[in-house]
Image 1 (spheres, one colour):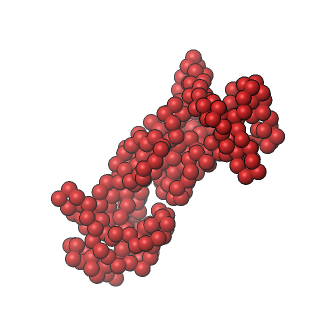
Image 2: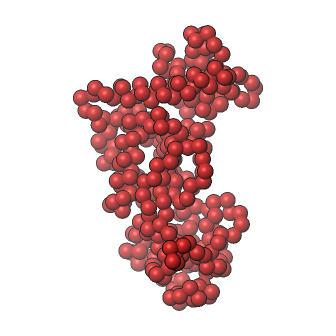
Image 3: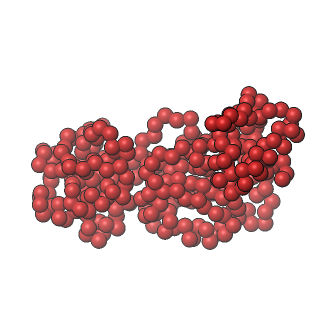
Length: 299
C-alpha cells in the first residue's frame, strides 16, 4: 500500500472515528485499515490517533497532519486530472445525499445522460429527508432544500424554487375553493415537521415583502416530502411546496393550484460540503451540472 492510499485511509478514519466503519465504507478488511494507519505512524515517527475500546480520536499531531492531508489529497486529485487528454473525464466515487423528491423527480431521471459523459464515475446516491451527518457518514456533499441552520459546513446556493399552494380535486369538492385568507378558517392544512415535534406555524404567505403565517387546523403532520404530497393527493388538506416537484401532478389534473396571490416565499436549495479544499474536480462538475438541471426547471 503506497503513502497516498495510507493518507486516504487515515483521513477517513479521522473523520469517522472508527476503523470498522472506515473498513465498511472503503470495502477493506479492518486489519488493512489498521495496518495502513500504523505504517503511516511508523513512517512519520509520530502517534496520529489515540485508540480506546469505544472511540478513535486524533492526537494534536494527528489533527495537524489531518488538516494537511485534506489539502494535499484534494490537490493530488486535481493534479491527476490535469493532463488527461479528455479533461472532462471523471473517475472515482462520488457520495451524495439529497431529499427524496429531488432525487426521484429531477436527478435520477437525468443521470443516464450525465453518467454517459463520465462512464468511469460511480455515484453513491442517498435520498432521504433525514439530516445526515456529512462527516460521520462519509458524504462528499449534501443537498438541502429550505433555510439552513448555522453550521461549520461550507454552503453554496444553487437556486430559489418558486412555491405553490395545492389541493386535490376531491378536497375541492368537499371543502370548496378558498379565495381569501379568511376562507382558510374553514379549511385544513397538511403540516410538515421533520421531527414531528410541535405544531408548525400555519399557512405561509408573503405580504408587503414579509413572511406571515395564517393559523389553520389540520388532522395530519408528516416528516418527509413523499408523505406530504401523498397526504395532499388523499384529500387531507392544503400543501405548500416547490412547483417543480408537483408540476407533473398539476398537468395530470391530480393536484390543483389555489390562492396564487398568497404564495409562500421561494425556497432556497443549497449544496453543503466540509472544506473548500475538499471540493474535488468530480464534485465541482457534479454541482455545476446539478445547478443547471435545477435552474432549467427539471427539464
